[in-house]
Image (cartoon, rainbow, N blue to C red; front, side, top):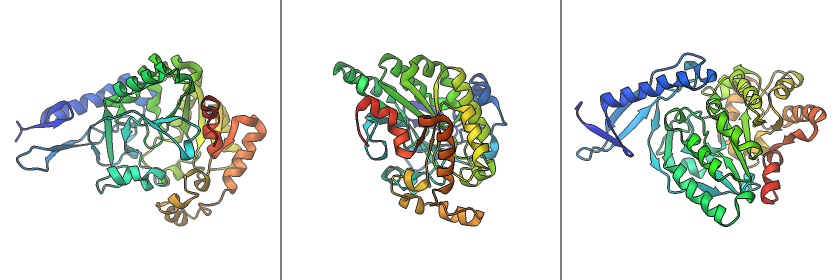
Length: 362
């Protein structure tokens, strides 16, 4: 059995080779950034299982948690390569101010309890009966597809009117990108064919690895970092597999030090310690701040959130009604009085700069 080989995309794996490769990926984190070095890291677990006798069709199960402290890890995630058939997707709905979205991965390791994607057709189509957060499909070859599509836009003189949101249904800097580096590959393509605007949405300190490329894109690149609360006890209840608040704030500060336009997205606004305390943290770390609520931000007037675990989690934790705007609006008002238009609300805030590029009106 040890000599049997599992084929994953274009890579051939044996049981021993797979484990060695996973451990090498883990060891490589020591050379990424100081942020990626913090915390204790869990070894990579690779289990190869035959599911079709005689056909040797294998799936690889991995925990790739090298960028996150062990207290945040989930036990096992299905990691399976999928060839990218395309890169850019025309967008609409909540993000219709943008022209396109870009998803280097299908699925998201962070698996936030409130994530609207868990109620979307994307999840229903790809989940195979698995819960949101338990699978990640790297879209191998996406950078090559992206280059082809951007070159076509360039030939039509349309690049300057292109605004791309990366990503709306995954996190481009989840742990899998330590190994696959699909996000950095895409950023390298954007250096060749820079769009009018590229917005990178993440909550992962791994983004610091690519600050050099982001900075090279200049004003065309905007880094959005999700920081929904200043309370780690709330984070542990609602988003237990995500990086700590302090890690994300430090990532934002470092991004600004690299000259990268940095926007903090309080989306959705979760229970926080106090308006002034939370607001001051945000002002110290970001250039702009977007505040959002479940009702205004889930793309369904709160209906998507109502189908998640959020109502039950709020009730058991003794927090206010999850549908209330009061706390989010008080934070937004406090920020607006101090930074004016650099504070924004929900969809208008997410799409304001994109609309100046594309001319699309929400």
